[in-house]
Length: 239
Image (cartoon, rainbow, N blue to C red; front, side, top):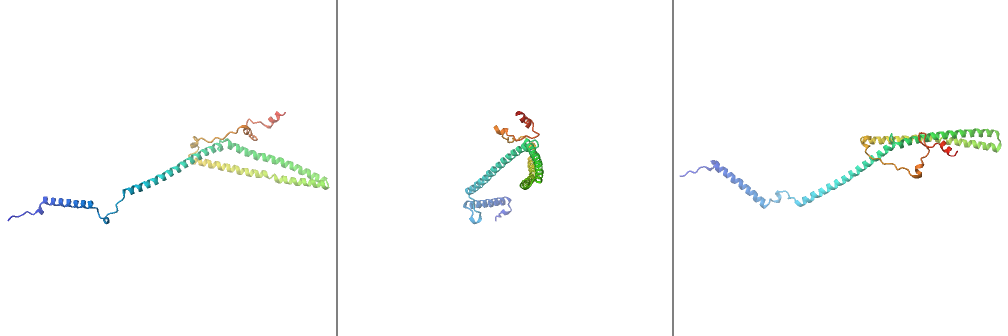
């Protein structure tokens, strides 16, 4: 009688059997993939063309938003550049060294001084008229006395109207305060952009110079003006 050896104890045969089983499983998986997995056991397959169109649509949308954002940023940049140019112009004109601001301040001072001097002259003349009318009223009778009283009433109106000098001074003070407020705001905006040093290279807008007859109409000169004709010079021309 022939006795067969137990193959289960043979390592070589066991390894061969496992190899065969693994290959069988791989073959089964290939067969399933070739036939297609049932729809119930897998997720719906994605359409490559639909995905491409969707991605292109999103890309175009993002590109459009980026272009819009760039346009807005460019507009902001141009606005900031123009603002800095205008601020540089204002600083050149109204700054501590600006001729126009100094001129405006002196002109306002001249207005106050001129109105004060004119008001004093008017009041002095009105007082003289009032005293003279009062003297005439005491010496005259009847209708002539009434005329003198009318003159005195008109003088009272002159006194009342001369209050404009005080009101003018108050209004000019407000104007000066507003100009100083504007100048302070300009300085603060310049500090935000790095101070006056950051505006040195910015070309300010140049004011147009007056031409022809307009260049000759400088208005009354100030006491601080140099090389201007005085009233004595003009009188000497007609002497």
